[in-house]
Length: 349
Image 1: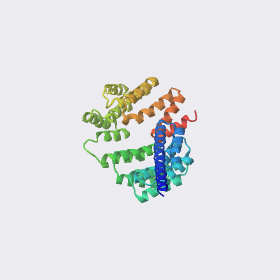
Image 2 (image 1 turned 90 degrees about the horizontal axis):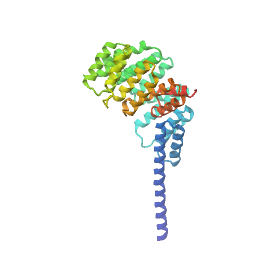
Image 3 (image 1 turned 60 degrees about the horizontal axis):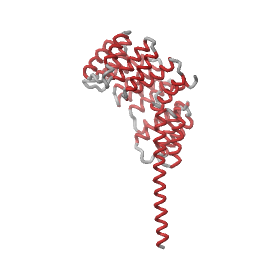
């Protein structure tokens, strides 16, 4: 009997050892899938996430990653299945993971053309726990469906729960995309009077005034922002855009050049110089400035730089490079609609 117990114990240890190895292999595959997704190598990402799934570990995360890669390849039917399986396998994941995955699924359903399913998901989330982001997304979908009254109700409830500058501006941008800037401007006006404010919200007030084309007020606020914090790259970049919008390329270029030596503002300044070059149709110079901005390694400026890099390769007629950059961009920002449109356009070239 003692020998049988020893064999049983050895078998148990072996099973535990194999289980541990499988878990390590699954983690490796999941990590490789995440890295491939970020690089825009979507087929490789799907393959690696699939390996993790086959092992039986990291199922919620791997299914979600696989779904995002499939979304980026416009394989919406499979992406929806993967995202649904992620939600079905949720065990120890927190509410934030489940909510974010549900929002990805709603976005995927909308892109698939199943706006009814997308609306159903958003309705369920809001019924469970209304929050500004989900209300904003439902308002955005309602507006696209022509439900203007319902959209406004969603937007109004969203800002009542979280009246931050970003939300007011996002609502404006949705109306602007629908060629209804006048309706959106009403939310910008509200932002100036009702947004949660501090004594140092100069950048946000400058941004709202920039959108309202109140360039004098925008310039005043942004100059205060840069004086208050010389390392605020966002304020420097936007102040230059105010000059550009006013037709003053020379002052914009001078401002940006003066900020390229400051590590905190260099990335935004190089991006600004690229905009000056674009205004003068100097696309090769603009691309060099964008790449210099990326080399500065400022994560806060990276998305704008990467998007401008795609556009500049298009302007230069380098379609393969543009598509490669667009794929990598979607790997980092899978829900960015401008990036989705660029990738779909480049896929037809």
